[in-house]
Length: 136
Image 1 (cartoon, helix red, strand yellow):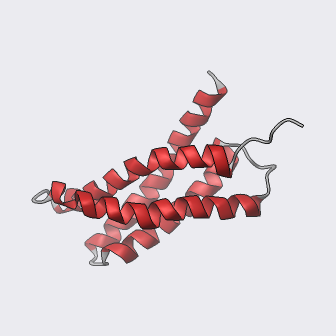
Image 2: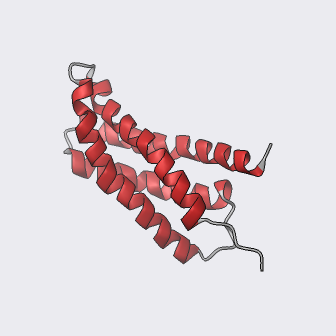
């Protein structure tokens, strides 16, 4: 298996883990009546903490990099995607799920936002946040 493919597979596994954290928490909060923005903020923050830890140590194996610089870059990339792009995608796709079961109507738009964010995150994590050190 090529190193690039292995990294993408690890990214996928980590993505499943942090997505489940995010989606489950978002669904619970939304179904409990918490409005969209606070529910998304809380759920994505929990998913983001899981994602940073697992992507740094497992996906990109960037343990030798400056953890503070990586954390700041990771937060900037992820926060923009999650807190600005996700709510827009959720709002734009919500009508697609009108009339569906309440769980589907709640999680469907969120899943659309998560799928959109996958490419964004991988590209910026691999090229900016956890980029390999260049040979001296």
